[in-house]
Image (tube, rainbow, N blue to C red; front, side, top):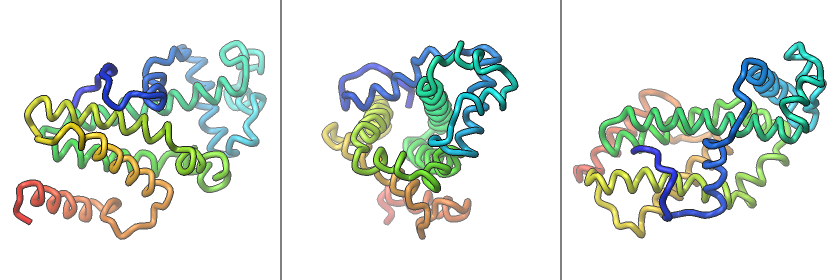
Amino acid sequence: MGMRRGGTHGSGHGEDLLRRALDADLPDDETAARILTAALDQAEDFGLRRFTMDDVARRVGVSRVTIYRYFPKKDQLINALLMRELRRFLTKLDAVIEAEHTSEAKLFQGVLFCLSFLRAHRVLNRLLRTEPELILPYLTIRAGHVVAAARSWIARHIRDEVAAGRIALPDQDIDMLAELLVRNVISLVITPETVLPVDSPEGQRRHRDVEGERGSGKV
């Protein structure tokens, strides 16, 4: 399932988030990388309400003026951090998908990667624990753009598989399948306690085998 940034299916304002993350012109020298890493550590340790440029500067060991040279405002630094983390997520997800040779494996391993990455993400988990009012609206009542962006991204991957003749799925069902996957992942990130076999390798293998049998018509 190769990444394609074009296409018209599922397009909308939500998809712009993912395109912006991939196309963002982030500072890429050593100092900027250290600033962003320090910002990630600061956000993990203190959340976003107590996030300050002074604290980031102290972590990096540079003056506040240096921080402002790269990121003139705190919001710009936080946005750059979010874009970097989203780009890292998408790049790794694409690598996981590309490494698999069947549509079923691409789907299964892609979903497992999303769950493991997001459920272990340092800042996301910090916000869910201590500042849920900052993050939960964007995963629940105001999640429209997030759901649309992820749905469009996944739907393009599914359409690649359909176009290659590896799976048969009516086009009108693709966006629905993609959205179901997105909503399941979000639910398991927000509420990680579950009897679903998503945490143990043995449970994952059992779930994969069941899904494979369903796909082959054996069950």
